[in-house]
Image (spheres, helix red, strand yellow):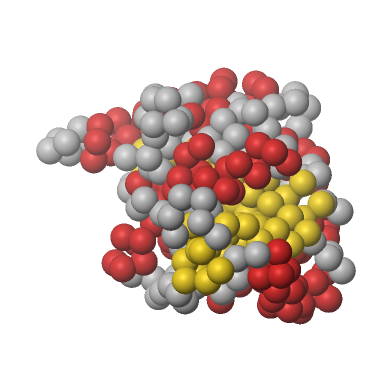
Length: 307
């Protein structure tokens, strides 16, 4: 499923949860694991002086310095390497983080990116929420041609990845690639696929109280649409469930994932019908990423998810 996995890290505790998932995924799927750490930004032009991403201090970078950073990375992830048996290729580089990550994705033809939701150790809340917007994670998710697995918290429900996969959709074209990824993953590893849609009634009839019969009719319509749009592509695969709830989308998908013990949530990177290059990470995905107890896969394009 994943021949090549790139783990983008700052080699700090903020990325420890993502590291656990990355090394375990590489172990289970016998993947080639590349650990990329952008440890400094060039101070000016082509100068050999860089600003360290962790300390903010300026350092002179040469081959010996890069080798020292590589050994520091190996030392930091020694426990994961030992427990998983996955050595991983350590890649310390200098540059702008999202630029270097995207450059390596293209260069190595990576199948999956694993990264944290933020690069600094912060508690959940307003500060952490603000740090997502405009972050490295958002820029990578926007431009990546392969799925981006975002790990925001310790993975409490994952047990050797993955058995219950939640696919959240709003039926837009952007969700088609997310469905293909979720279905392909379920089919290859024998996981159960839970297809979920939340009716956001606040946006349907603002200021109007709907009759229960109207809501039930909308639910039936959404279920039929789910069957026509997705189930029709699944052939004889029958290990799935369809559920339609009404409410605030991110709240309902989080509740549903907890109820089904979901160990992976798959969603489109954005929901509006616009060019993926111009799309910001959708607010629903942002909220799910920050609150989910399991990893969230943000899928932007069909490149790496279609057969």
